[in-house]
Length: 167
Ligand code: AMP
Image (cartoon, rainbow, N blue to C red; front, top):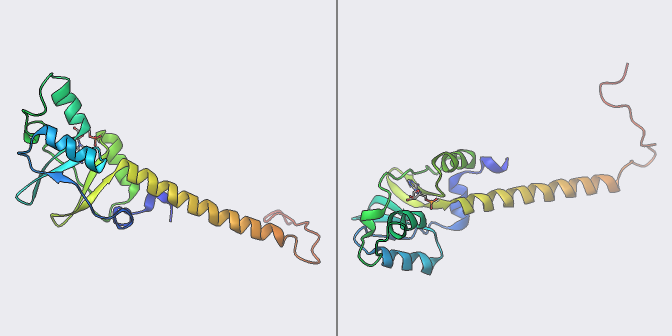
């Protein structure tokens, strides 16, 4: 398996399915507090069990702070992004990275048959890829080290003809 062929489900299994959320009626100030408490950069917005939007730090900076508006007076529903792009658990990280890069966002809620399974961030993707690559490097290093200690085999001069060069 290559690192980018890891599936969204595998990442969720590793990190757990927690997805922090608020309702659209809470104030932006309150939502910022929830983000700070859980140390996340985006919250799902869920009304009556339905995913109605996503609210990220960028929504705050662009739709609130830059406009000189006040976070205690605005509701999340007024500044969130409504068209939420989601991922399926079977999707591979290569596809997820492409979506995040093309759409320029860092969070993807994961849905299966309309049921929310969790959320993955660009940080989760990078972490999973690094772990997979480290594991591959470790396996290759062990393989090479093991090979070198027994090479050349007893009674073997160590001189070989490269494959395909024999006449
Ligand atoms: P982010 O980079 O995730 O902090 O978000 C950047 C912008 O994209 C913000 O306006 C978010 O509300 C929006 N956004 C983040 N994730 C998604 C998503 N999965 N679907 C749609 N919009 C998103």
